[in-house]
Image (tube, rainbow, N blue to C red; front, side, top):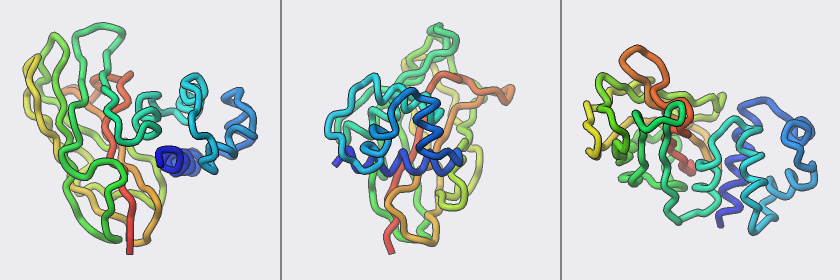
Length: 202
């Protein structure tokens, strides 16, 4: 159920940011009652405006929230820098380990995304950088940065990272990644990035 997946994600983000529900309610302008309902997966159809406010409070992109909430439905992701169309990344598919896949505690696995360059300029010398802040219980990358093949406008490319699951089972754990250009800067700051979300079993 998508509401349960969203609740797991919200708990992870609150813990990572060391934020209480009281503080989250104050920052977002959403009542504590609504936050508690979201965390208990008691809202079957959350309003889009509510999810957007929650995403802003938890410093994540609304599209990531929507993708989790509408579990199993395709939600296109695209990011633009400064509102321009110079650099635009479009999410195509989770080639391996789609959301909520199960992995065993301590297991090493390879996550592969397929993306497309929807912008007007090529991606030259880019890397995919791990930006996870989930504290102790997280997916450990074999490398914090992996090269992105040079990609011309209109081309699709597969991006792969190797991850190791935590040694302790948990309902959901997430690894976030963003594109970095040749100068070491976030290539598309407004883009939610790519993420891997799995459930860890014994």
